[in-house]
Image (cartoon, rainbow, N blue to C red):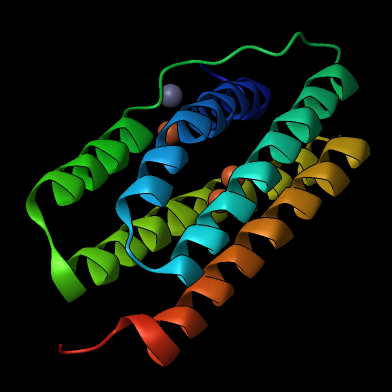
Length: 158
Ligand code: ZN
Ligand code: FE
Ligand code: FE
Ligand code: FE
């Protein structure tokens, strides 16, 4: 990896892998929570994640590359941490900790898409810039929704 173009392509493969890993991890979170609200939000974000994978395929084709993933250690770590919460937490702590774990994932994605769309811009990849901005906005909205849910219903002491 030497050029910004290399870094862009590498990071695109990384987030493509991450989104696919999330389609397998999110159903586990939906199943583990006792909150109907959190379950609904996670289910909705699962379908958005599938949409994002389709948008990423368009990003690859806009730069004449085939869609492929490359193992993302960061998302593997975040998913592993979430699985640990599912095994160990219960009661009010379970839902609060699951929501927090979901927000850690959204923040990771926001960081990645924020970087990717700016790199696309300087590389002259207009279409990729627009598609990545579209995904970034979905991730930001998902994160904001989780923040409101935490503050309004999930964060409680009993
Ligand atoms: Zn990587
Ligand atoms: Fe995503
Ligand atoms: Fe990564
Ligand atoms: Fe997300």
